[in-house]
Length: 282
Image (cartoon, rainbow, N blue to C red; front, side, top):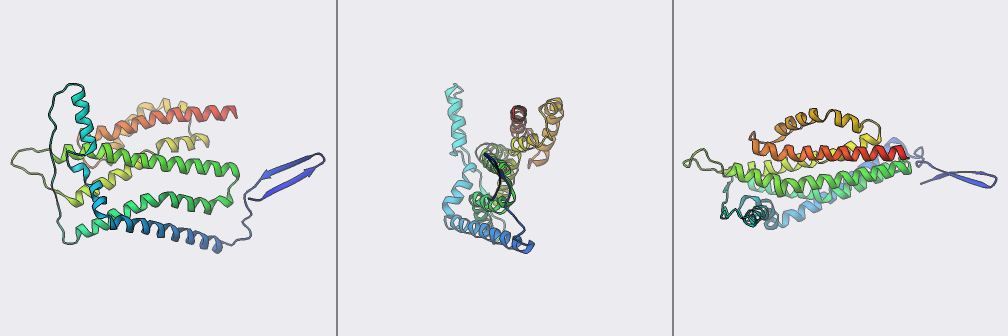
């Protein structure tokens, strides 16, 4: 980072400026960006190949929610016993089937690349920050680091929320639901994986709401008064969005998705209020 120094008698003033970019042409910037993207792709492929090699461990984690010994089900049963429900453990398992000759191999590759993307994403954020940081002031760099770090943390939190709570309870409810004892559930591996990945990505995006609200508040586009005034409208919008992004139309899944979204909205109000307070004190 270069600094412009202006000296006057008895005083030295330093002004933080972005690095000069007139030394690099558009094609030079394009070459730097291409190199960063190639590094990101290489790291993603390395993590993806590692995940591909550890197939048993990978799918032991992915397929864990389909059996009653999954940790979430055991915790819920322990809580029920603790409060004296006296209900026996609900032993269940849902059989998954494969409907295509090469589908298991393709799904194995997709799952490995998805895991590789998750593990490589911090490195990807670092490379992108290195690319744009020379054009930013020091204060702007701090905001970028905060937004990127908070956004990544909230995305991972959303994925974990989906894996440990939303998807297991949804799958248990729908996978064991029967309109008649004569109708047996046979869930395809494609359906299982597609639902898990889609719900994980969507919940990761939903958990970005507080970060976006904080950013908009810092930019002056959003106020706490506005969010409070339109709280009822937000609840309707949340229910509508939850109905759109959920893979099924049952009220159980809708409640599991809409409740955390509403809590995130209320958390966003507190975050925006704090951001406004700091802005006034500055």
